[in-house]
Image 1 (tube, helix red, strand yellow):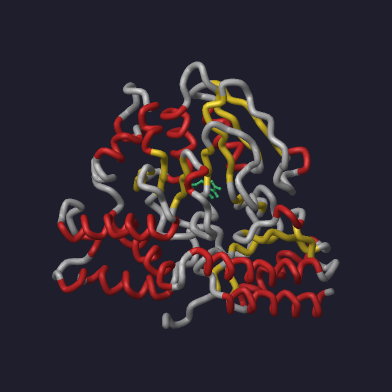
Image 2: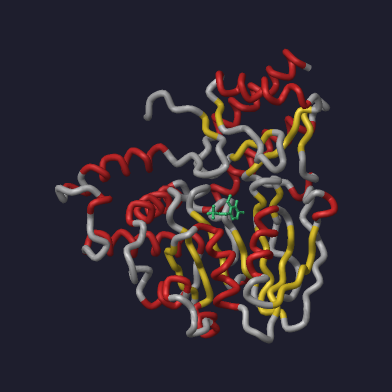
Length: 360
Ligand code: PMP
């Protein structure tokens, strides 16, 4: 147990499993008795080669990633993928299609415009992104359809993949990757920064159909070309060794806990506690329509907006931190990723009921 630990509802970087932190701490000082710490070790060493290949194997087992998909450990966050995806996969005679469901989806769309033709296949902007659009209209010569599986700021989430016949699905899964089982075969490419659901900031995972590498143009800068990572097992240059190591620990932790079906159930249970509470009163106002709500980021307001600051202050005093909504949306947000314990969510719910009793 780590002493004096708070319940951390930050949107990312976010809470990591205690067991993982404790193991990482030991190996930070002396990796498995080697006499040097994990951060001080060559990325070309046998030890690190084992770390990165075990991490990949555990990830493949967790998600059931088929052989014909490549797993790439890149850097630069989801934001770099906003550029890399169109740079690598968009050709002059094709169009990148987007479903706009929030700020991050818009950012990916704006970035793609720099590299070729784009088209908005669906958007819920007029409804302030309070729901996930259900219909989608693809352009001609669609290269791929990009969607954001979980919208971290607004707190919405696709239940399943968008229902339309895109030649390739590209998914920004930055805030719900590994929170539930998905069928990787439905996707051309999935990307996610590690810092919300599975590791420290610094590493960004890309899972892609290996066949799509044939689309990459030769003119790309090496570090922005997916082939550089695929050909060199993500070791062309010095990767973020510590971050990859911790991701590997998280993958193993997820497997030990029973895998993604178990985790998904727990995530559902945690989210249900908060949404049931929010729906049971007029004191709080959930932001997103019921069918589109996220199991990862629960967004809400207090009907009397003046109570939001006191709410944050008193929550913090009660050991519940990171509940302030994104600056673009305001209000409150509880990010309850995989590593956020059920007890943390129960403590938050108890605090919310108590706060309503006092101030309602
Ligand atoms: N996409 C989503 C859904 C996000 O939540 C974020 C970060 N909050 C990003 C992309 C940007 O990721 P990064 O900070 O790793 O560049």
